[in-house]
Amino acid sequence: MSLLPIRVLGDPILRKETVPVREVTPELRQLALDMFETMHAAKGIGLAAPQVGRSERMTVIEIEGHQLVLLNPEVIERAGKVTWEEGCLSIPEVYAKVDRAKTVTVRAMDLDGKEFEVAGDELLAVCLQHEIDHLDGKLFLDRLSLLKRRAAMKTWDEEKDQYPNFIRIVVPGQESGDDPHGDDERI
Ligand SMILES: [Zn+2]
Image (cartoon, rainbow, N blue to C red):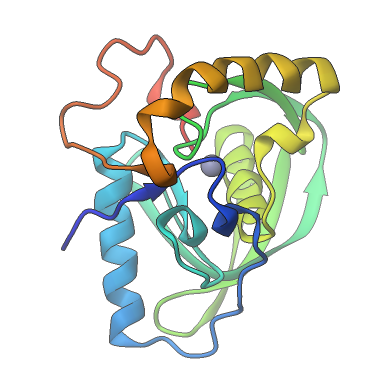
């Protein structure tokens, strides 16, 4: 396995629509493993392919030891409303409260090429919606009011110079040691 560099806000790939996966190849399985490893090192709970510079419609999620690989995921049902403090591995140190559906059902394909459905509530629902947004070229910033977005961008302006060429190199064991935010919020 290998750690992948994470693309941060400003890299155009984060704004591109992804391409549906037609076939599960050994290379794609390897990418899933590398994405889990990268996500763990960055202390996150979700990571989408564009965040590591790839265009496949694929995301990985791990919540409370439960791992999910979702290929071509789509939300088929949503209900309720929840407001969650979100961060993003591609916008380090920036957090904001985002309104989302409280529960969602997502249909996707797994690494065996089989279709499955996953229903999520609260954190899992937020994570699924955040990751599927990534696959559509959207970021949580897009869901903020103008005022909140301005505040978030002000924080980012102070952070972004640490990431030349929009690349974040994750060093295992050195991430977010003094970050008051929980791991649950980096998605
Ligand atoms: Zn994200």
